[in-house]
Image (cartoon, rainbow over all chains, first blue to last red; front, side, top):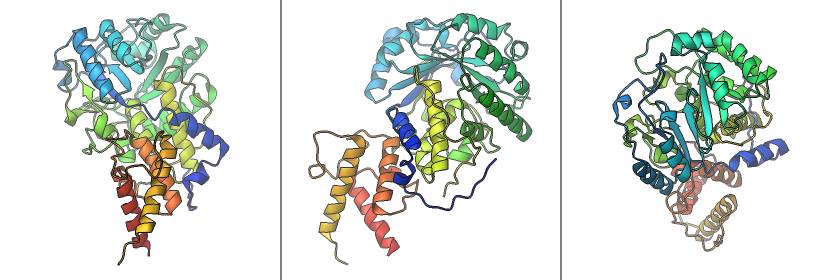
Length: 353
Length: 91
């Protein structure tokens, strides 16, 4: 990894004087209005994946509220307090299409995390994240589901809402190529996630320094070979495969790790459970994940993005940060087009003084 | 020590101008901007906009703003006082 010593002090105005940086900053800045919260939609799932964070901790025991009027009221309140982007997840949101539609009708920007085996109607026009944990042989072992990728592609063929999220574990690193090739051949998109251990997890899916390094290497190869298919950047690779986790590198800004309610995620983010209640002490995008091991793509999307100020010290770091934000927007916001990465070096994150 | 009120007023006006430009606020001028208005609660800006404003102010006034400090800069008057304190530290 490049670890350049940048001793020149730059003004922000000098950094954004570069036409490419200026254009990219203007592009991503239009989305600074996004303020997210996340919602567990159902406590049911058709799969039981090893290491699933939803079925860790207490949230799985929250009762389901299936009343669309209650969800309408919740969403209206969310909109009034400034939430502009919803993430519908756990356990499997596709079980409750009426609730998803109610959310969409009130807050039209958002994303649904699903395993993709139950199709979600196109009238719910959110970005759709389809989880993939290896090739179908490995999925059968880890998720106990047959032909997952084939069935996901059948359900979402030609659907511009869909992007596959490949979760790297120590046992599926070498399968990412096969999956990426298959998705590329079918004109789909893929982005990358890292298995992040739930609290107390001691299974074989927890990453080690060796598996982090191997994962980073294959991510780089696939990004270079499939630039139209892989939605990622070199700085994403650094942030998510670094031996230090996201919190250690960037100081997680979710309420669970951030007591401040002054501004940003610490002020506005909530993670609602299926009974429409939320707990500040547990509020983050992947509750019950071990914060020290968190390299989750959803966490990074918020945590790295929030650290703009820290990256605005020189053109290289700011370019890398812009690539990260451009990636995050392309992954999460439907119809947002990713641009070519500005920084193709693997650079160390800036040191927080 | 005497406080130069002219200098403070100019600083407040310039900060207001930066905020108006960065946020593209309408129906307000640097002279009419309420310097005690809470930028988060009353103007509705979020952390990314505040970070951008902090970067522009860092450039404009030639001061170092710690990452942990800028979220606290929530009114024009607080920003002006922060700038003044930083300048005093540097003297």
